[in-house]
Length: 512
Image 1 (spheres, rainbow, N blue to C red):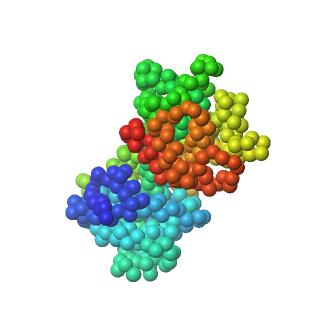
Image 2: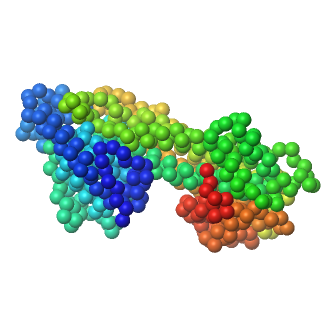
Image 3: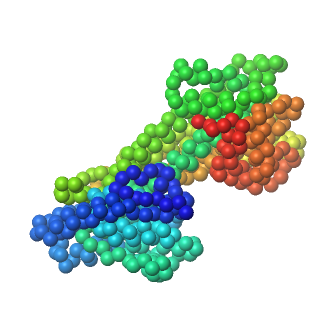
């Protein structure tokens, strides 16, 4: 099994995906263990002094003015975990929780948190054992980080609360730890706070969304090309020299992908022989501009994610010169903004895909295709309601594009009077990515059927490869009306699993 070694820095997005989705094992480097021990010495020295230090010998948030005596500090750290584990609602997905825990471990190992090496090792042991704390949908305002979600994870380290075992059953966390020979941690000064105070949940969801959207943007280039082909459109608008004079990188990449898919097609431009069209509709002609803008948004979001991966987010932090200082680095605004930005781009990509699908189904705009791509229109309804489903998904995408980060709701007796709502932005982006996948799948379903209905005209080799691969995957072609939901589910799986991109790349080589 793949192993990810966690040092004081250098964790990558690929590492996060390997742990969250691939079940990769985790090891702590010797460098990380040394940094943990060194930072802990600083915290222990401060804890022994009479002077109050936030998070070490004081309360938290609006209660930070109270100095806590030494005999109560272990109880203080346990209490903050128990009281902050106050989430409600549905359980959060296993991959999100694993990403959340791994990213917290990454920051702990930076040597800036003051957590003991044995606590970090327990975090790694829990992940390696396949134990997943039960984390709930609601409870994070994205400042001070993802408090409630991280608290539920810390509760598991203490052997309290509930967690999911590697077999998928939810049981008391203490039982699961005992079965895997993991001793519950006894938290000491600052450790409870250090386990709760980070942007790890929203960052983990950002990293996974970036991976999914990278595939979806390539998929959307493919379905846009298939629709252009099915509508007998022109590929002249994809010429590199046209995109060079408006040099947005994403636009050029999308146009190049579409052109690669369409290479060798006998359908493109065919309309010019008998029914001249000066220009295709915007949803076809401007596909690279819209998808390209989304690609450039991905690039910006990826830069933010890389910076956040290189960060040690905690409050207070242990500095190399021995100071333990309060700060505001836990605020989730940088991550929240790009999560919302990606939801906007996803909504627009879904919107333009739906407009192309609708054009394929409308006999007045489809240039000779049967109404709704039906076998016997009137007797058959064809894909009429598939487009309804797609429209409903797009409408939901538009609602999900309303930014969460524009909101702020004060908390902690006005001490935390401006929050990022980054967790909420991440949660709705996950739904948006899911819905966008379905929207692209429906365009794929319609476009492949439309191409097959163009009898006597040969599609591009890449298009033919897609059609054959889709049919082999259970995405059925033209014919009389049938139970449509299984076909759409097969199309969704074909896109979601990356099989659409794989099929195209067999002919075109790697897409951009």
